[in-house]
Image (cartoon, rainbow, N blue to C red; front, side, top):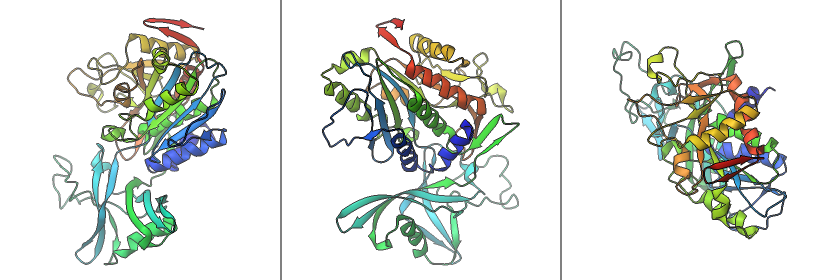
Amino acid sequence: MNINEQMIAFIEKSPTAFHAVKTIVEELEIKGFKELKEKDTWNLEKNGKYYVTRNQSGVLAFVLPKNVDALSFHMVASHSDSPTFKLKPKTVMEQEGHYVKLNVEGYGGMIMNTWMDRPLSVAGRVIVKTDSGLEARLVNIDKDFCMIPNMSIHQNRNANSDMKYNPQVDMLPVVGYGKDEGKFMQEIANSANCEVEQILSTDLYLYNRQKGVIWGDDNYVSIGHLDDLQCAFTSLVSFTEASTKEHVNVYCCFDNEEVGSGTRQGAHSNFLSDTLSRICKAFNQDVEAALAGSLLVSADNAHSVHPNHPELADPTNRVHMNEGVVIKYNASQSYTTDALSSAIFMEACKRADVPYQPFTNRSDTRGGATLGMISITHVSVPTVDIGAAQWAMHSAYETAGCKDTEYLVKSMKEFYEMEFVIDNMQVTFK
């Protein structure tokens, strides 16, 4: 498979953040990484390869160098979550004696109408009561299971004009006919390999069942969750393929970026800072000194110029799919890129023979933020925000450029392998 086919396979195995981390961990273990537990004492070895998870939805991995006398960190961070709908605890709703619906609420800033009239299903995590205690199990109703039906144009004459969606009314998926409310939980129990009575609580989400495709003379790739699993995938490939000599390579995939990152597995937690501190402590190194020579790449996608609305892009900083890695700038620091951090990553792109392009929002438009600005409140290092250009961000089905998947892998692999020393505002390349 080529790199975009591999990415599609990765995303299709990752309908929720829990499944994405499971997929990442499986790849790490194939590549020889050893699991660490946060509750245990860490005994780290030079040249060692390790990973640690939190909440089953966030994962950090790192590769140690041979020389651990003066540590620094080359870090790339992405996120595992995407906008969707989460099922409420009492989720089954009977309607008119004919339909069964699921009571859901929005997670993140999705484009609501893109979730309508397409096959959906349910996946996530359940907590199961066992003879020995409680156990978390991943579940996936792996079939076309439900759908959110649109209104016909005859019943809603505003469908093509000023339509506003009420998530409590318009966005509830239908799972079938009849009044058999127990059937839904039986589906979940079957997936969890347990009895319904054993399920104590759930974290369940809708996901889009539409398969990924490569189209447009192999120029474009479309699938759900490109924001941000395209970056989670490409940074994983570059991380596992890169070699390191004098620094620690770190792979970060946080959860809950789409709702502010303020969870124990999000970028606004101590997950990364504690992990870096424990690495330094294992080799009697000063973490503050190590961070002073480190760099973080915040990898999250950006908006390509839209073919039907080019006026929405900045007049001069206009990015296009298949024309290189996007480096994102914002005067208010929604993106953390500055002159130094961008110059370092530009050097990585040049060495990898990868084009790059600057992105800014229009000055009269507020753009989104990334996990970079949040993460550095806990790990204060120079940071550059990058990503791939894409269309329809936060749609249930997004589109990006095929070449950019390759560009992301090559540039981040070079960043992981590149040796440099940061001394305040001076950078020396080795």
